[in-house]
Length: 177
Image (tube, rainbow, N blue to C red; front, side, top):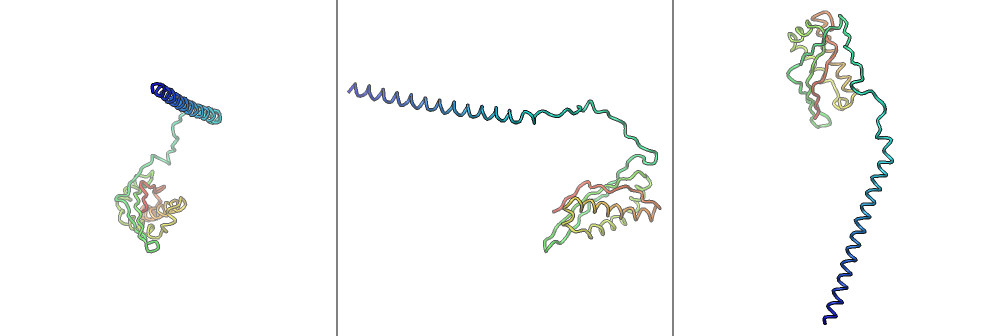
């Protein structure tokens, strides 16, 4: 009986040693595959990781912006409150919320914008109402909207001041839902 226990102990020891060797071989195999994968990735990507010779930020010469007397300093005027327009698209309600700023270099234009704010907002709402909500989702549609809004404001300023007064309308916020 003692001999049978000794034989069983040797067999279980051999089984445990065999399992341990199998685990070691699996771990070494996984580490080898991972190492080869990392090396292959590095070898294939090393040319792409090198950045082309570009001057650093400190090497780019910075120049003062040149402004002519006619240009003047840019002045921004926020059209407050935000415009909220609703559209019906195939029986589905869609909403557009836009916050606008106006770019001008003429301080007198700001005074006229403030004085005639109700008329300008009315004209801008007419422009928004004439838009197609599907076209506003594209870059071309947004640029057309900017052009139409700029023209609407310039039309009022031409009547009131005798000159366009503003350069462009800028979006501060553009939310479609």
